[in-house]
Image (cartoon, rainbow over all chains, first blue to last red; front, side, top):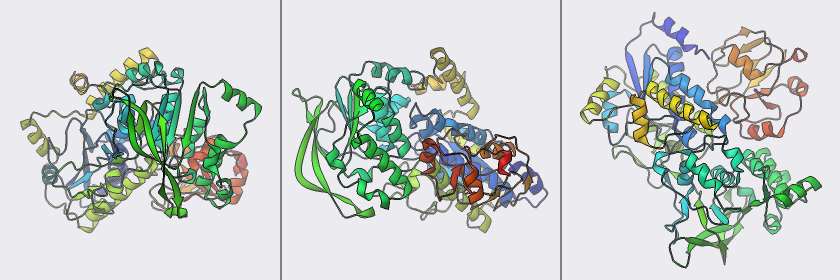
Length: 486
Length: 113
């Protein structure tokens, strides 16, 4: 798609064009959907610059790993390749003449945020949420207990999770949390291997899943059916998952059908589908399909983890103790309250999918530890001129690609407004990536360029083709660097 | 002329499109287009290089809601039935209305004049 900016730049070069305005977008971290909002601001900056300003904007992107795209590469499930099409848009942005990618650079370690601020007129932090919320219960450290973040990282080839080696030799897996990540994990655990083997799932995950004994997955939430955080597409995929049947307790859905007419469309359609899967008597064909199914999945509601129960040798998880809740309040204010009752569920695999959490990457950056976000007003980091943020590190770790993309557009607009109004001073000449390169060289850090990434990309694609997969991801940073420098 | 209001990601506000003419709230760009029968609205936007931030991120595969369009009654009524998969993604669109569809599923044909 040809960006109209190119025409506008030609026009603007006839106007009084002042100088190069360099913006740098900091540290696209793999645990955040950074490429949507690193690139969206890059995109919008590149597009809007010509339209609104008579300055040229150069956008440099710093990323810790040698490979770009963040959660689009490491978070989106392998069996959702269409969602990854957005990589094509990002690639176009990255290949723009005034955009450059610098992989293998750790902001906060190889170069500080202060040093970036000295080199650039503006720095945008969009490093996402690399940590996760812990359950905070005894037994969380037993073998067989994983965060969804690490489990997803394992099957998606995130280098730091390549040695996870989850034990899939049990029959029942319990997932805490009922968002889309929880459903992704359930689906990957129960999908026929014949489907998975044609995706970009990592080979070691594929091999482990082929040997897996897991036959039953419970997806457990603190609150009720009307509070599930997943969206209908993911629920429909579970309902239609070959070789599986839904198994839920009708008693957990009492009173739900009566609420349908008062629900907004998205929640209404989601709840209708949930009720259909959970309690409706299936037709003949569906009944037959369910009887043949060897694997089962189901939601369990009003349950909160109290403790992971150990095996007799005290090494691994053998069960989970759950507090039984009831709901208080209504509408948005519905809360789960403990009843005092407790329930034990036998299981060998516990995956907590209760949310990601942003971390502090540089002490010079203001950080709200309670909310785990960078304090900001419309993307302007509080008390720090020239520093902006976007995406999960700005708003908290929820939302699909479209949500985060829109958020990045907002930050970019804020930044451009600041340039336009003169709030952001772009009058001094700044060294940009030249300044940062000097520092990195002194520190023995060699950045990976976008065309270096393209070598990694080709090699992964080549290795995948041999196996009938879109790509075989490299799991080792050292190997990525070798291929990048070849 | 089918009148289409596009609910843009990033809240640029509505813009009006038809098989004959497209203009945007921001750029005020009028283009007369002729579009091949059977092409979708997304195809039209791409082929004519109409730049809308983030439009069609998943490239028409029903994996996002960034090509959300709002039609007038006449246009909406003329379209074929909506499938579950489109409705599922539409549920996530910003500013969903009763006349909403996904642009990648709206096929323009001569009948829609």
